[in-house]
Length: 286
Ligand code: HEC
Image (tube, rainbow, N blue to C red; front, side, top):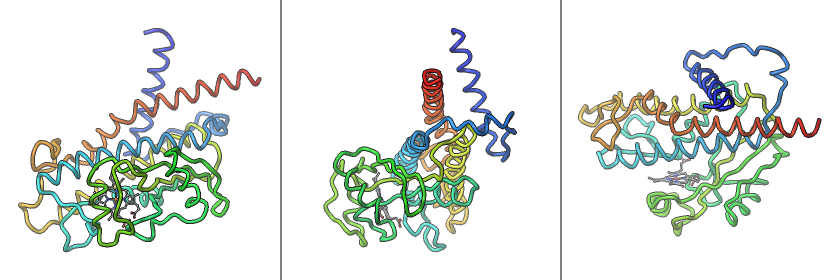
């Protein structure tokens, strides 16, 4: 490994250890105030990074927990939190769980899943977001803008009908507002918001941590729900096995560990690439 490679590895390990402190709730103090005021990332870069983590997390939950779990007899329902309903959260509600946990945290990151033809009326895009969603539907490209009403930097990313269940469930749902969704359609968009136009390393890492803590919180809420199921035979065994292997569910740690393995490398590479680019720009402009 060359010197650059070693430096990069040390940096990756450093960030990894900062992120893994999330369960103890602590972040090391910034060494100097200059680091703190060092806003090296444009907000759209970090919202894009976190939207990619979210895609991976949501796909893992949808396929490995919901898809494989249903084959084992696990149920998923929009009323999963009702006492009489013994089921887990649908993917859209898993996302809402993440979003409400982030809202409870001190990190000012907003997350919302909307559409122009929603099942749930409160998910309907309005104003500027409705306008830009029309663009996303035609070219599937993300949109980054300043939302004047809320005074928030906003990024929107297409949410595609990637699998048959997306289309079938939405077309057949009793509250649907559209019955001819097709595979590949832009069914909605995830909207991410943040109050400032740039972020320091610490702020960027806080965003990633808030998102990952949200994932852990909603997954843990699902496991708590299972613990309260009345009939023992409806409770999968919870450990290190996944539903693809039988009537199992991974613990929150095992689930989060998988998410980390799938996302961390890409996220760190992005943080590094962005910082290298930034440094070069800085050198050029100075
Ligand atoms: C088993 C049924 C089911 C499946 C499968 C499903 N959804 Fe949904 N989806 C729902 C329900 C119910 C809601 C409304 C949840 C709420 O109350 O906010 C929803 C909400 C949404 C929303 C927000 C707008 C709206 O309709 O309220 C989008 C966008 C969305 N789903 C896209 C998808 C995509 C893409 C997939 C596949 C990857 C998918 N859904 C799979 C049932 C489903």
